[in-house]
Image (cartoon, rainbow, N blue to C red; front, side):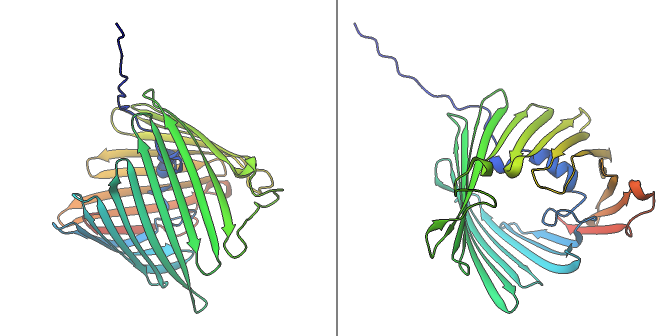
Length: 325
């Protein structure tokens, strides 16, 4: 008698993050409430005045001003999503004559999410046009995720691509890597990285390891030109988050090794305190207060370089968000 057994795959309870999200927990803790996400390095909160509204039909509108490269911009973001079909449409405009239109779907195929984005930007009287194709694949049976992102720069005949993949298991451990390359469409030649002897080099490969438990996340990233980042985020039972990051610059960089600490603490249900400090002497802090009637969030941000004294390096920043932000 021959007994046949059939193996059934059981989906893992843990799915690894995309490679682009390795280290995101510590990155957000150090910057999200201090600097604008889209303008890293600015001292104060980028969004100075913001109004948010969301209708019952799923339309969301954000109107805000933000400081980008020393210039205040007026921005308008709109979004419409349909959970039944898994589709979402977004439109972004700003006073710097930048336009972005995107459409995404999470139900094209089991485990597949795809987004197509069109970007237009005026520069010196000429419109620059980009098309971005982003696909993500998740296989819960084998704990695998991948992302393929392709940017077509129509005005320079250039295609830039990033391919990444990550594996994880139920212990919370994830390992992954990402490789970028650039193709000139007019000659169909792969461009070499700076200082590289060929188009494909190990130096361009980014690798990462992340361990995620219930109350702590640790990550190690290696980036091109040997840059290394080691970070962690610890969440206490009360909800307070403490994080740290150690960065070693790559070869040929003028930067120095840096240690950065960050804290997110809730003083009460409506008041939060955020702060960061690094080994160069930079100290930044934000106090945010939520109000229910009217619905708004008020933030007060300050920064100083204690290596040069204890005076505020710039006037204190103020941010107000109205509506369902």
